[in-house]
Image 1 (cartoon, rainbow, N blue to C red):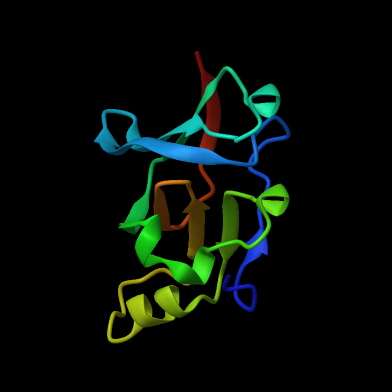
Image 2 (cartoon, helix red, strand yellow; image 1 turned 180 degrees about the vertical axis):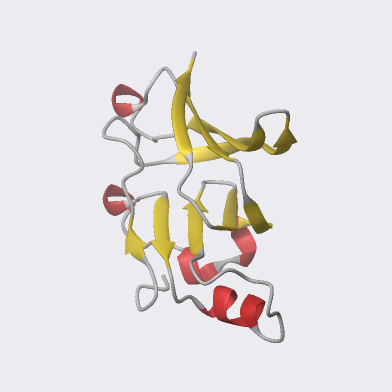
Length: 131
């Protein structure tokens, strides 16, 4: 895991620790990431899906979890899905040669059980829970 750049992020007090990506993309309200709770312990699994909504996303990347060994965890009890950084390697590379990138940009990582999602945005997302 890229601990040297990222910090654990708690987007809401009621989020589960493990999610799976359901859907991602631009919709009328903005850029939406829909997540399904996927805790291996069914007693800890929420009955609500999580949606994260950004009005401004500069870049996003979706990679199958298989191809992101930098985010593989060794202890399932310590699994966590949400991280953020203001100085990641991905963000640094995005800025190279691009004078249009705003000064304040956040790199969000959502580590799912099936995909790892990188999102660069100037804002934190709105969080909502959906049945």
